Amino acid sequence: MTNQPTILDYVTAIGAITTPILVLLLGGLGWIVKNRFDKAIKREEALREDRVEIYNKILEPYIIMFMKPDILAKDPMYKDKSQETAISEILHSVSYRQTAFKLALMGSDEVVRAFNDLMQFFYNQDLKQVIVQDPKKPMAVLGDFLLEIRKSVGNDDTTIQNLEMLEWMITDIRKYKKNGKY
Image 1 (cartoon, rainbow, N blue to C red):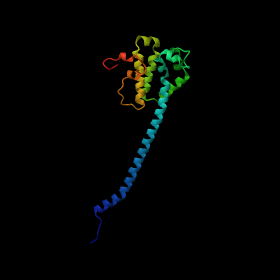
Image 2: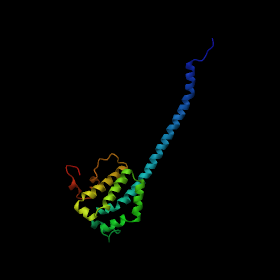
Image 3: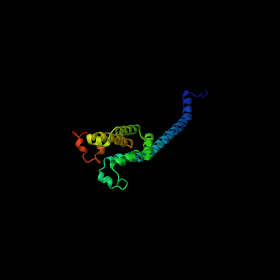
Image 4: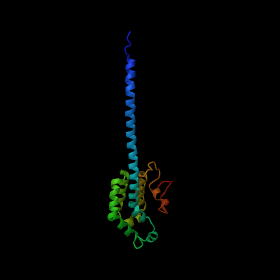
């Protein structure tokens, strides 16, 4: 009687050959996926640092807008300028426009939209008149922008409201709060 190979012998032989090949392929695939994931994380971290620098520059005129004039006058860069003049000079400078261009290229979609809303709001307003008539409006669009920046730098699950983003900067902002909400 000859010992002829059985189907089980063939399956075992195929399994012995394919198992190392599958392990090698899956290991390689896992390495590729991990490598791409690590690169994406590094790119996001670098992009986040660039974004924070851009956000800081973009926010300068709005920080000045909500400063008390006597505090602004103590800054050597602004001591001989009114708030309106300082803000206008910054907003109309080539440097600010370059930074805004960088924001449009590097900011998240939500940040760019919020910045566009902020700029469009102020393009269509007389700043002094708006702040006197209804200060909540400029605060709300600025708060929306800050909130989107907050989300873009990693606080996706934030529950803070837009005007809460300004509480540290505006002394009497809580007068607009009713039943714990703005």
